[in-house]
Image (cartoon, rainbow over all chains, first blue to last red; front, side):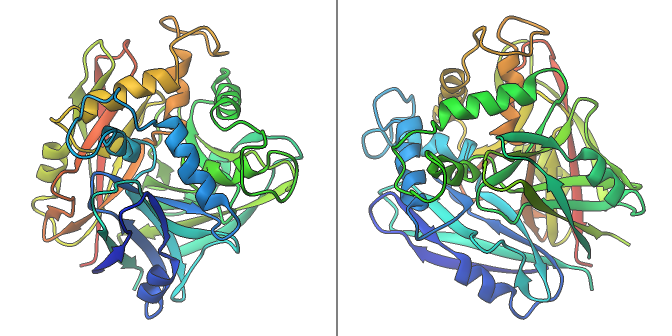
Length: 135
Length: 135
Length: 135
């Protein structure tokens, strides 16, 4: 299995960061197999969505609605409302698997792999790419 | 890696379409390994739920509640409220992995693999099955 | 592919049960590869979250808010409101993939693998671990 960690700057704001070019680059010298994308953080997840036409902002805004940054959370470390960042990976998983064919991600035309990082206290995140092939 | 695209009719309504027989058929000549199910569309996802006892309708209805088809979305192409279809895959992922044992999906008795397609503008969808085995 | 089912006591309450030690133990004699964790039940899912600092309780409480145990559900078997347990796996998937390196789960410091079992009628659950390696 080929595996590699990349560092992704996400800044100090809630952010949806497109990882597709990093994932494509990792896969480009490989053959057919499965790409595992895994975020080793407890306050971030991965989504496969369209970017550049408003949907990344829509996703982040709607996650603020569904998981409000208020005082309901038992987890009380970090910035106010940060407890919601710890619940989010239960619904936006930090693990994703994408088929790779001839070194190309088998994504649809409008799909991008996005790091969903709502944590405002960690400006750089790690993402692990791992590839398991068939020969 | 063995891989194949199947076309799934989903009609012009929001639909939860059972893919279990297609997935079982794909796996049936294979041995032990992991089945990747991947939907190469930006407005569809995959769920593993019980079908035929109301829960597929419950899921679709509840997703309408959690992701309302109203005018809150920045993404404004397509039918009114269609922006919510683009956010949904952030929570109902288009990628799923299922263990296969002796050519049989290792699903539980009450589990089915379901294509969640809330997009009313695309009556046919593609689903990619990929199998990575151990021998 | 190496595969094994473990039985997990979850009791008669909605529960988030940490599976990390069971998964680590399964992986410990293996090399590099992908660990599939799969729950063969229609009313349970898997999450990767921090445990022990309130977030597991936060997740379960918030899932009660997002998926209320009321009479809106068409599925009407089991305890009152049990229909919501059948919808939950659409959002908290029963399938998870984790990279393994030298027999160690490549989890982040604060990540645990958690079985999310909101079903009060099944006190013991099965979880399947499967490992696909590269040599």
